[in-house]
Image 1: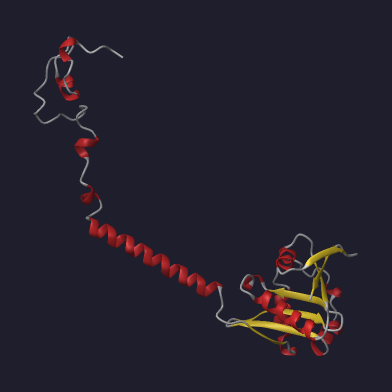
Image 2: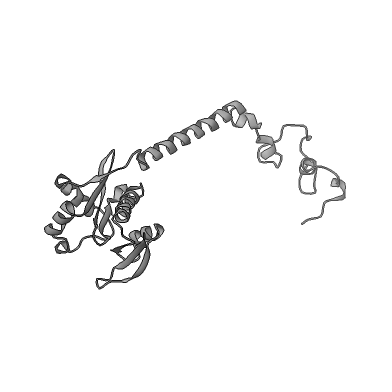
Length: 224
């Protein structure tokens, strides 16, 4: 950095900028209006009061309150969409079978790649003799469960992807477990895909994995 000439010591930046130097003549006094491009034209010269920048503190506060109100409305709308007001469980009927088929094929996991694994005779038996329940909300049928009341085996439990996370699976599973207990069973069983969301769901409900069956699915057991 160049040394400051003795004659300029103690002067402000504006004075030093305007003072004479060997290679530049003196300019107007510091009190004159600064010229464009000089160091005096900076943030201090162009800064406006805070109230002027935000249109007044009252307007700034009103804008903040309006933003908060809009967020509250958005949260309330999401809550209404994501959490139904009421879930009902009832016994399935033959009239429900078309929608039940849509639910079965409307899941990303545990897809039915081989339709021969589910026969019409099995469906008819669960519908007439065993436990076959459906869950509904204000939008219609969203899930179903089939369970063997004689062996306490949960044969199928599915909730369509668009309604998952809203309590349908929990409501169906709780109703089946209550019926198993009423029938005198001490434990329940089911199978599902390994490392799937369904497996995580059952673990969160207290089910414990006991092994892998011949088809490669995880076997779960719950003490009742």
